[in-house]
Length: 569
Image (cartoon, rainbow, N blue to C red; front, side):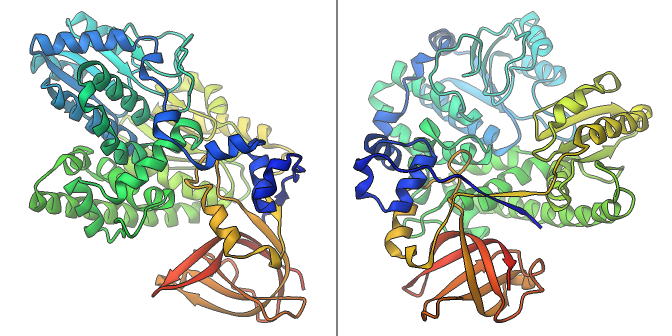
């Protein structure tokens, strides 16, 4: 059972909001949008107005001068990226910009299973052997101090383009473009890796190809995908990037992306506009599947491919990787659920270790288990001498702080409050588990770990109409710090219900208003059929839901997207 937390409704004090539906006005105030001018800017992101000058980055000029030198001397430039959707899209847009500048470049994306995240000495030696003289890192590099020292020793230069936490001891790179750098004046911090890469690309065009700068909007499809996939805040500059990027994606010129949509049965075109959910659950997982199950070069090559037949072949490979990823993820999730319900039933930490856990999916599985049991989870692949794994946590526990207290037992670790990764010698595993368990047991002692659902406000049947759903759409694109509004409605009667969908996973409810009016609401609960198998006709329920529209065969209707329900009578 979830705890429902209804946010305090902030009184709307500004007369300018009389033009808005009262519920919309309250939602704006909850998001600290408290004037009509702020509301106009929020509802109408503008590419020219809302994107900041890339030259506000303090070391942008220095980076561009080195890129100019590479062009003048006909040097070979390496783009060193990450293997996830953010990293892959970053690699594509930077290489496309260098292509426009007629600079020779290669892309190096490490193998997740063999090399792990970030730069490594073997890769650096490989780039040196290919006569690379400049490396541009994207979505990585800021934590690679030792590796960049080695790059410098070998006579190559490095430009770091990254968005991750900046360590105290920073690498000695020729230039660092990172919004979190100490003293950095760039006004918008939470850019994704591809967002920072886009600022570099903007600067390249503005400096060297100003006449072509207007064509940059056409790469916003990839910037939007990487930004959404990396779960950064969808406010400010990111909101504008994603808003325009989704428009571009609906009419993308990329042959590879069109084939990915076709093979994956992803319904996106100018008549079927994508939203952030479609990116998060259909596009990003397929791009990520390449790096998880095979190599991210597969996704990179697909996005860059212009030939339709080759694109089709690559898209089919990615679809196969994604299906394999889904199958293995589900198998291992079920396996660990048995452990969770037996060996770890009365423990605060679920700690699963096995030789056959593929490193590419341990984070995904840990996330699913943490969500299912509301406990911190470790899923670790045991190697011959060394083990590697991922942690996912719950809001009540900062997992990286707990791991840091055991750092003397680890080879390597990193992450943040809700997700982390480790490398550890096998002989230290048991001691690490015991120590971490004690720390977590103590940290969670007495804390309320029941999952919470935050509700924006309670509304009433008469509030719901097409005017409200139309106004709510203006809040899109939804994401971090701009979540889709969640509502509470009480005392509805279950008139009827059906189980629908593949595997009978989804629940469709038909809800009557308890005051006797003939109004009936349709609610769909994706994946909730099993959870609410106890409901019966004529039950009185309170529901938590999101509000939208559904259109089928030209018929438009209001639909409630069920989040949770409680039988009250």
